[in-house]
Amino acid sequence: MNRRNFLESLAGAAGVLATSQLPESVHAEVTRKVSFNALNLQEIEIPVGVPTPLKALHISDTHLVRVDDRDDELKRFLAAKRYSLYPWGEYFLSASIQYAKEHHLQLIHTGDIFDFITEANLDLTASYYNTGDWMTSVGNHEFNIYLQEANHNAEYKARSIDTVQSVYPNNIVYSSRIINDINFVNIDNSYFYITEEQHAFVEKEMQRGLPVILLCHIPFYTPEHCKHNMTKKRPNVALCGAPNEITDQLNKLKRPTYSNVEPDAEWRRISVSQRADKTTLEFTSWLKEQKNLKGILSGHCHHFFIERFSPTAIQYCVGANLRGDGFVVTFK
Image: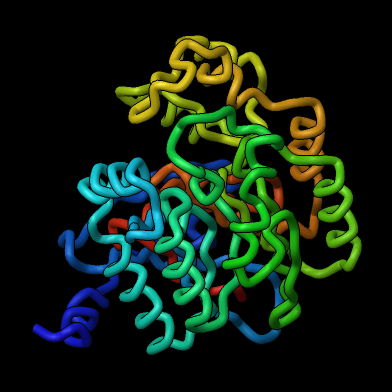
């Protein structure tokens, strides 16, 4: 089978779940209904009140794993290990781009397009983002110089932010773009915090008076999604702006998978790494009050989850593109 026929074989879609079908307070986890080698696309509708509907393909968490001789021995070792977990990322990303092209969909990617920084991953990411018209958010993995070897804070992010920015089509800290009278606002919340500068930017965008769709990597706190994540075999919060009393429950060490650097460090605790600061909690509360907010598109959790975030907006957490997951969104 040649590459074109292979991609065509992936371009299947299944499942429909419209916003109009959801009551005022709801959560829903959407499960996979198609075979492993087909795109698993769920159709959703987000009412924004515009005269001309816009359709988009929302994907996240591709986790590209590429390495070559420009990268050091440790990166090549990590790539070999991680490829065993994420071997389908390139195929499903290519299939997603092809599907969007054939169906005239705006492309949206909400982070973790690659697994960690390698020269080959940077080149590959740039080549994908040069294909088609993208709106993007950055994820936590893009800033990984290796894997799990350092505290995920602003200081660590600063070591690679210029490198990551060089392959992204828009400003990764915050940006906005208006299409069909819809304001798509992107913010980087990949390390579980929002800055005062980002808050000010989003507030200014809200003042435009247009319907806003927020793009971010990590979903914001909603109660049922949090309960779902906390009841997994390996409990986690994995949500931005969660109340401190919830993250404080997870005070056990978050053991590294590959790194032996500071294995007992305090920053490895979920209660530390995911604990929301005052600015983030204030932003999350403020965001719930914004009448122009019509929806949030996010990823990170590697599963589908839909839950109302505020009186005017539902949050859509998309499954992992590395498994072919995606939302086909109609904004209307």
